[in-house]
Length: 108
Image 1 (spheres, rainbow, N blue to C red):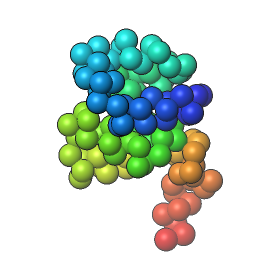
Image 2 (image 1 turned 90 degrees about the horizontal axis):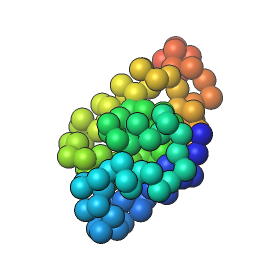
Image 3 (image 1 turned 135 degrees about the vertical axis):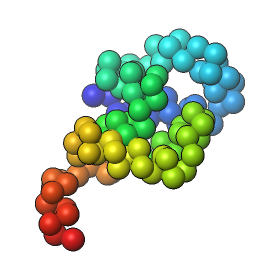
Image 4 (image 1 turned 135 degrees about the horizontal axis):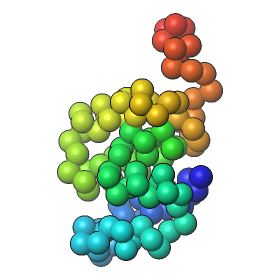
């Protein structure tokens, strides 16, 4: 997994209006300029906010990408929750889950 490259792409999309315009016109071209796994590439292109979250993308970076994709705030939050249910615990980054979702719920 290439969390750094994935995060870098999203960070640059968030800050560079020219890159945003190019991404809207041809997202595959932009994504091809970064060293990403096939899973990461497809998550960006869909866009699969839940999977991107599970892959370890920081929420501050991810929320701007969601907005770029026209995803409303409440839907963004739900997609992250759904991502954990569908793809399992967050795998990397600052949100990595060290216990299972069931253990977290039982401890609450």
